[in-house]
Structures are given as structure tokens and as C-alpha cells.
Length: 296
Image (cartoon, rainbow, N blue to C red; front, top):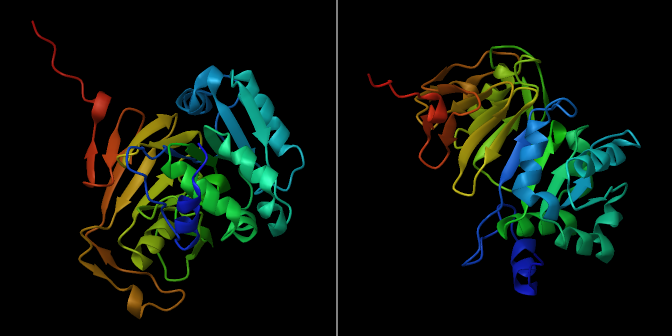
């Protein structure tokens, strides 16, 4: 899985995403809405493990977003209990840690990389623009799967929600964006979505950047995003997809800090496990939820 020298040199001058080398396939991107089930039926984490190789998986956990000392150890035990062949924890307390060759070499061994929850600004300020961020983008372009929960989900895209206000209605000041890890520029992620009433701030994020698709992840719910940019839902909640591709009008340019924003033409899809959304075609499908009529 080690990127060659030319790919690294190319990636150093790029933000996102890294180019897929001919003959290779991009790895899956797996943002989780936080509070994923870890004991009784950890189906999201199980599917991530299976995706990464099951018993042959080699997963690197990055707990940098968390301020709790035992977060990495807890996820190490979780993944080991799910049958992962090898699990390693790489924490970064200072930006200079991201330049250590042994840490980069450990990433190169991974079939999966997982970011824990915490504070996404800790991730972006610690890892943004570093050799570690560059290496993870290059590895994902070569087939390594990258997932994250809560703050670890937000960081995966190029445009990251740093913080914002709760509520149904978008206002100009209801969201603050920051650069994310940059595995893709096709979507903006928000997490703990329905539990923390975050529709307004995700709508505001799209008003600033209508090109992207908004993905609102409920707790214990994940978007398994395939290499072809199709979203598959896993977990007990829903994924709210906001598509501003046909936006007809936005008043964001005229809105003051606390003013509501008018947005016309935004499409909303609510997906649960079994439904899909293709970000390339912007087409939603009921998938396995659409049951055919029974014959006599």
C-alpha cells in the first residue's frame, strides 16, 4: 500500500482528492454520525472491519480529536474484539509528530484508517497540510479505506463544518467552515444530525458552497461511500441528503450575520439502511427497501 515517490510529490502540491493511479481503485470513505453501537450490535464497526479485510485487516486508529487519554486504547480493544488481525494507535500531540518516518511507515501498512470523535478543529489544526494528511489522501486513492466517527467524520471531506448553531432555519452566521482532510470535495458532513437539530447549519453550509452535497448523519448511522461515489446507509438511524445542485436562488450574498437565508430548489432525501444516493448522478434510490409485488 506504500505510495511511490512520484505520487507523494504530486500530492504535496494538491489539496484533494489525490489522483487514483491507473489500475487502482479508491478506498471507501466511511463517515459515522457518532455514538455508534459498540457492544450489543456493532454492525457499523463490523462492516468497516469486513471492508478492511476481516481477520486480515490492519487498522490504524487516530484518536487525536479526543482529549481523553484512553480513547485510542478503547477503539484498539473494540477492533481487536471484532477479529481484526492487527490494530495500531497513532496519536499526534504536536505537528512535528506528523513528520516522523516510523509513523508514516505504520500508515503504509494499513488496510483501514479510523478517526475517533472529539473536536474536529484539533484534527484540522494538528494534521492539516502535514505529511500525515498527504499520506492518508494518497493511501485512500490507492485503496485504503478511511472512516471516522463524529469529529472524525467531519474531517474527511475538503470543506469541514467547524462549529455552528442549532435550529431548522439557515442563517448566514449559523455555520463556520474550515478546511478538512480533503479525501473528497463532493460532500459536506454534519454529525449527531437529528439529535442536535443541525438541519439549519448544514443548509447554510450548502448556501456557501452549492456544489457540494450535504450529508447529515444521525447517531449510530454511517454513510459507506463506495469508490463510484454511491452512498450506502448502515445503522439504526437515517442519513439526510441535501442536494443544492438545482439551486434556483440563494439570498446568502445579501444576508447579515443573523439574517435567515432564502434557498429555492434544494432537494432533500432521507435515507435509511437499504437506500442509496449516487453523488455523481445525484440520484437517490430505495435500493433493497423497494420490495416487488408478490405473485399469486
